[in-house]
Image (tube, rainbow, N blue to C red; front, side, top):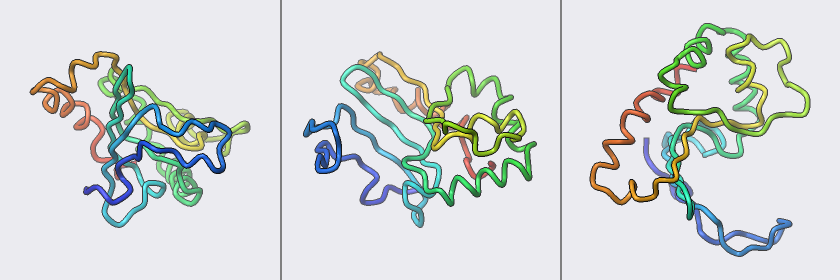
Length: 157
């Protein structure tokens, strides 16, 4: 994994096409992705920080429809791979599933373990913390390592 030129968020927002005309973001993030993929074409490991919290995890940003279609097809063809993810209680004690749902499920007959993630526009597994003193302490990387290890590797899905 490596960071690409667009893997670090900008603080300024392009307001030309948005309803919100605030010129600055309220958070910053850094994403690690495979070198040959765009952020919308793969799962990325990321870290984000806001004025009141931080979070890290595995997810996708503005997922490409072809990427999600492939993921949905794999979920239907190999449901056992997805059973390991939701059934992993160690994973779910630290991470929660987030992301925007479709109004109507894309795969209404998806097997139960895969139904939630494959019927989202995009998704991520992330914990949030409001302990902003932690990122400034020397053992912070060691505190994050077990969480990132629980998420690896995303290619298993």
